Length: 91
Image 1 (tube, rainbow, N blue to C red):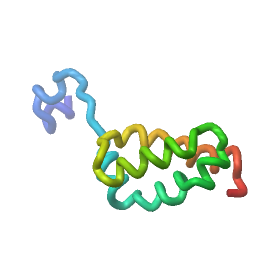
Image 2: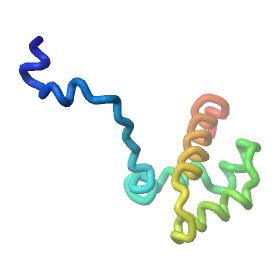
Image 3: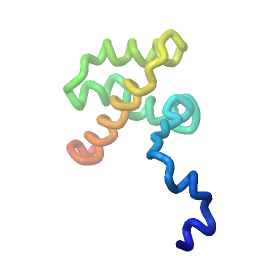
């Protein structure tokens, strides 16, 4: 096969391997503005599904490096972005 000529056989025959996303780097770097945009008190209240005080407290802890749980913040952010894209398009 042509693939085997260009790619070593041990790479083609190995089991699948997962990978992780650099969520923490994104949230603390180039995507940090999204937290301010979608996880502010007004936006959290508008979606109406989350306890505003709890979410704000978790974000504060995350920003102050008191907790390391970027997937929690990421999931909240993704939901909020989805909500304002598809449900409340007039944000």
